[in-house]
Image 1: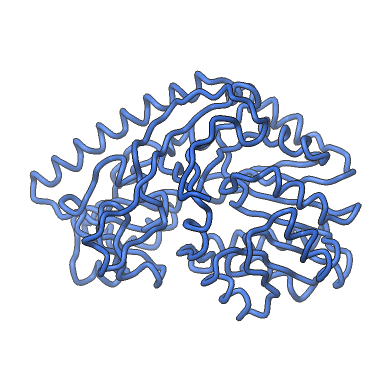
Image 2 (image 1 turned 180 degrees about the vertical axis):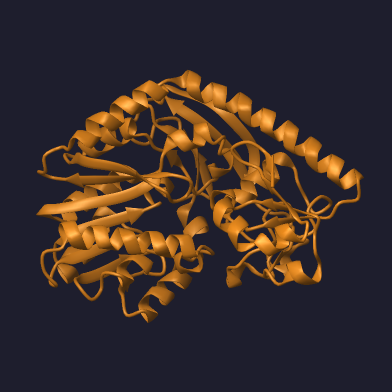
Length: 410
C-alpha cells in the first residue's frame, strides 16, 4: 500500500455521492510525536478533510494513510488514563453480567491496547487481544493476556484465530471501527468468528458530539469515520448481522455502545435512538455545513484571545498531549511562540514534541518549577477531572482555558 491514497467512494455503502464540509488543510499524523533528534526534519503531512455520504449518512475522512504508519508503534496506553480504566471496569461488569455463561467462554477484544478491558475478564472467561501495535502488544502479554500482534481481518479469523482459539462468545472493539478503512471486512470477520448466540459489542465516537461540541479536533487521520446509528445500522445489516441494543457512554466526550448479534430481538432503545438522531438532523448535510462555520468562528476567537494574553506578557502552557491536540494546534496554527510547553502524565510521551508545531512535552512536575498564568486544556474531554485534580493551581491564581465546545476561562 502507498503511504496515502484518496478514496472517492463511501467506505460502508460504496456510493460516490460524497460532499465535503470541513477542510483542515494538510496535517501531520496525530500520534507521530517527534523525537528531539528529528526536530530538524520536516514532519510528513497529509490532506485532512471531512465528507458526508448522501446515501448512508456516514461522515468520513477520505484521505487514508497506510495503517502500518499509524498503528505499528502507538503512544496511547489505556491504563495511563484513570477515567478509561474506570470506564472499562464498568464495561467488564456489563459483559460478565449479561453475556458470559461459563469460564470457558471466549472474549476477544479487537485492538484491545494494553489489555485493560480483558484484564477485568480473564478470571471469569478465556480472553484474547488482537492488536497491531508491537510495543502495546508486549504490555498486554506481560499481563498474562493471550495476544495476537496483528491487524484483525476476515483472513486472520479463518486462517489463524478459529483454528487456534475456536469460536468467540463475545467480541469487543472499542474506538477501533472509526480507525478502520476496511471496516466491512472487519465486520465480516466478526460474523465468521461469533458463535451462533454470540454478541459483538463496540464503542465509537458518536457523530452528534462532533457537531454539538464543535469537536473538530476529533478529526485526524486515524479517525476515518464518525458514526451515527443510521450509518452503523446500514453497515451491520450489510454483513447479515443486526443491532439489538444501543446506549451512550460517557467516554471520549460521549460515545455510543452498540450491541450486535445474529439472532437477538431488537430492544426499544434502537428505535428510540434512530428517532433521536432524526430529530437532531444527523442524516442531513446542512447540520454538518453549519458545524463547519462554527469551527471557523471558534478559531478566530481562540487566536484573538491567545494573542491578547501574549501581548500582556502572560505565560501559557498546554495540558495533555492527546491525538486531538495535534489537529487543534496545527489547524489553529498555535506553536511554541504561544505555548511554552505541554504537560502529560503518559511517561512515553514525555521528552517528545507535538507533531507539526514541535511544542515540548514534560511530566506534570514541570508546572511546579515553571508556573504559568494560563493553562490551555488540550485534553478537554477530561476537563472536569483535570480541574478537580488541579484545584490547588486554580486557588493559587492559575487560570484554565477550555477550548471546546465553547471557549471558557476557569
